[in-house]
Amino acid sequence: MFKKAIVMGLGTSGESAAGLLLKEGSEVTVIDAAVNMDLRRRAYGLRRKGALVLLGADNVPSGDFDVCIVSPGISSDSKWVRDVEARGTEVLSELELGASRCRCPMLAVTGSKGKSTMVKFCADALKTAGKRVAIAGNYGPPLCGAALKSGKLDWIVVEVSSFQLEKVRMFRPRVGVLLNIQPDHLNRHGNMQCYRAMKSRLFGRMKPADCGIVLQEDIPVIKRLSGGRNRWISFGVSSRAGYRYREGRICFRDGGRKRVLDVRGTMFSNDVLGLAAAAAAAAVRACGVDPVAVEKAARSFKPLPHRMQLIAMKKGVRFVNDSKATNLAALAAGVRMCDGPVRLIAGGLLKESNLNSVKKILVKRVSGVYLIGKASREMEKAWGSSVKCRKCGTLDKAVRLAWNDAREGETVILSPACASFDQFKNFEDRGSKFSRIVKSITEGVER
Image (tube, rainbow, N blue to C red; front, top):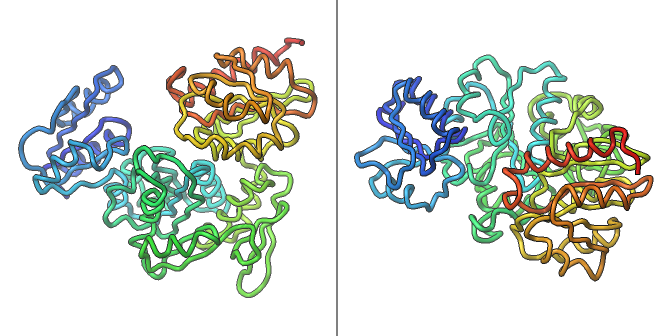
């Protein structure tokens, strides 16, 4: 319990944290540098509950606070955070606050890509086994909100970002999964070493009975960085992995006997999502559930919007919305998950510089690249000598040119490898517009 609290950032996380603190009787101040209609709406609701809300703030208001709750969008080295820390105020993430109020165990998932799909998959599997489950965190409602209902739950499955881990102190999931670590958010974390260390914080407060689930080849470095005292379980494609994915099957030992889960014919039957299925089997087993629930959940799994989402099929051509693929590793994964040749739509605001890192997969699997947004010139320069590239400018033109060129058995996929803000509000807006364009093409329109 805190007598006087300040919340930095009035997005979804900040609003949820402020709401929890107000219910506990704290005196709450909320600040945000921006001013817009959405923030005004949130501010109105919190003011009615007794909070002081300052929009368009330049500085942290004077005075002392018992705690500062910082939203994920505010860096731990920002001027505001440094200000309150200089006053001796403890700074915690919204994730930390919510976790401290949880009355049921947490299964936490982090990684560079595939976190949201993994969270939903694990939740589906636990529900299949009859468990009472909620989803929270970076995907789903903030943990502060879910914590208020946690007394009636068996598990909360939490998606955790590296931003949220910057200011955790006692955060302790009962089961933690690190799916992968690939270059991302380096503009905030500085380099891969710092980024890897930040992800490792997921396991830092675990106890010996808790379980950390990590790619087999990554366990030594993550174990060293985290300092956790937990058990470690590996997954991967190597025969040394505790949970191994191979050709549509997940193999593991359970009570001394060999077991096999069959995910062939599902969206997890590939080298990318197959690893997620192996990690999910390890995770639900660590939650005390028979991993056969993973096999059942895989067969009924519905992909999240904008993540390898099949939009339509026309004359044997598949249209897939993978707008959430905002970095090069996610683009490569999306291409690998497609059956047959690919017509790739990519571009936007680049977050990385090593475009050559995906050239091999483009040459192997892509029939043509259709470029949009600000990165078009840079991508064409990097890839144009190896794969046919067409600068299209707009998404509408790219989709129609890709459709015109596509042949039966090919996939037209939006997997941009870039942020969306040069042409769209966010990746959801980009994916929704892609879906509308595809539907205008496929619903009765002939070539």
